[in-house]
Length: 277
Image (cartoon, rainbow, N blue to C red; front, side, top):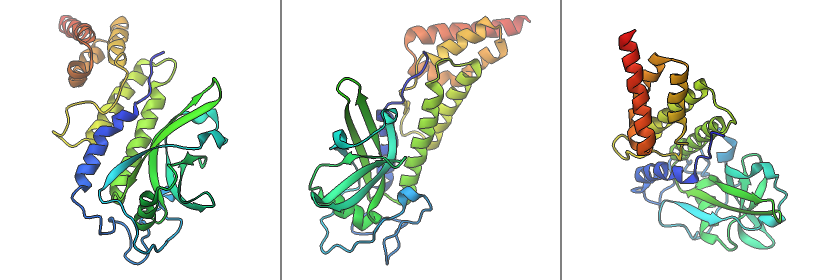
């Protein structure tokens, strides 16, 4: 099966960009998009809507803009469908429950409670209340182990980032998930492979600053481009095969030397066939 899961590590490049865009902002100021009076987020997206405007006396706030990483606790006690195993997007929501006055719950975008961050996370809770009205977008990965029926998971919470930065991150995750669904199909047609390659390039161009990184932001299946070249050769689709030169960066930077060599040989064969026709 040709496919693969876009690794959570692929988000790192985007995170670097987002943090670079935000790191010089003072945390003593409300993030852009928050009203001065109520701290409400200017977004129609429900995940980013505040759930409570809570005034905290002398809040214990984080001192740096950062994507905060946490293990998700208490997953064993949740009723989580096994179908949700994998990467997820959702929201972190502050709760004042009997067990932890600083509880921060982690929800899947489908509304399923996945668990909580570590008990007593006052800085996290105060920062989410102060800057995000009690709820903020988050993303992460959860895994279901059939043997024993156990769950494990982690979450990243972009605390204090400006609204436009979080919306860009959410859009990135959405497009990344759509691409993952495409390349995860059991069988990919020639058209599917072209679509996946062009989609990947489009997402890279959209979210990575020019000149900031020459590396791919995805763990993209390395077999798609070589197999596409082989399929086109078998069907004598020489014009399309020769056109694979548009992915020359992919061939040079992301394929093994063996795959790069065979792919270029097929492209050169196509060029000869076109000239001889």
